[in-house]
Length: 411
Image (cartoon, rainbow, N blue to C red; front, side, top):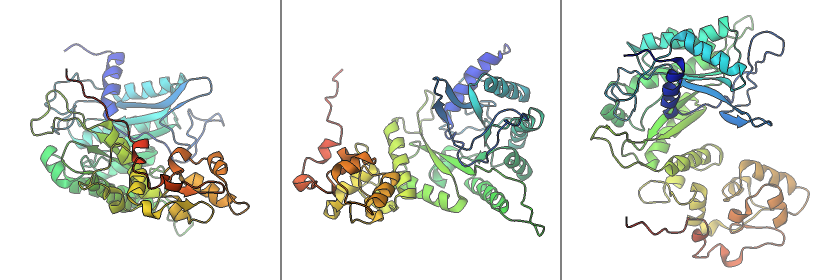
C-alpha cells in the first residue's frame, strides 16, 4: 500500500470525524497568550463554528487520530469490517497540523477522537502524548476536547483530564441491550464506570487540602457524551429518559444526539431506513426543555401515543396545542413557570418580561420588542391591547405552524 501524504490523511480523517458530535468549548477555564508566553487562547466563551467580523471561519480542528479500528460495531462506518479508505496520523503530525492551523487563524483549538488500534491503552497513550506535546512542548493554550476510551487504564484518563479542557466518553446507544446487540465488544458497565470516575475526579478538584490548596485542574469544561439515534428501535421517550439519567448521574455538560445513517455494507440486522435529521433536531429541543424550562419527560413524550416527538412542530408547541385549556396567559400576571411554557418565549425573553412588568403594563408590541416570537406566542397570551380571541381554540391553529402536505412523486 502506498504511503499517504499528510493532505490525504487530513482529507480522510477529518471526513471520518464528522460522525463525532460535540465541539463546544463552553465552561472551560480562561487562558490566553497576551502575556507573550505560550501560543493560542481559550476565552471560555464556547464555540464550535463561528465567523469573525472579517468573514473568517473560526473553529476547532476536528479529526480522528486514525480510522483504523479493531472493533466491529454494526453502526460505525469505521468498523473493522467496513470497506473505507484508512489512514493514521502520527503524534507529531497531529501536533504539527494543530499548530499550523492555529497560526493561520483557521482554528482556536482541537477536537480529537480515534478508532481503536492495537488496544484501548495503546490508542489512549498516543492521544495523551499528542495533548501532552501540545501543552508542554508547544505551550499551546487553546481549547482541547478529547474523546476518551472507557477501557483505557485509569491513569491515562487521569492524565488526559489534566491536559484537556473537556473529556467525553460515548454511551453509544440508548439502551444496554442495543449496545450488546450492535456493539458486543463494548461493555455498558465499563462505559458508566469510566464516566463515574471522570465525575469523581472532576468533583475532587473543588476540594481544598488542609493548607487551603486546590487539587490540580481536571477537565475544567466537564464531560459530555454522544448517543447514536436510529440504529436501534428505541423511541424518543427511551432516548430522553436515558439522557435525563446521564445528566443526573454524571453531571454532564451535554448529551449529543447523532442521527444514524446506514452505510452501503451495513449489517442486515440494522434498520435500513435513514431517520430524518429533523428527529435529531427535535431531540435537542426536547432536551433543552427538560433541562431549562421545567418540563418533565412524560409531558414532552406523552403528546404522541408511541412516545416519539412530533416531527412537524417543536416539542413546546406540540405540548401547548395539547393543553390549550391552560391558555391564553396574561403576560402581566402569569408566573415565570407558566411563561416558560409559552411557545415563542425563551428563558431570556421571560426574564425580560418579568423585569419589565414591574414598572409598566406590557403591551403586545412591548413583548415583540423584548424578544418574544409573537408569530408563535400570540395565540397563547394576552397583553395590553391584545387578546387572541378564538385563535387559541382554532382547529386550524396547528396548520399555521406545521409544514403543508406535499404531493409525493410517482417516479
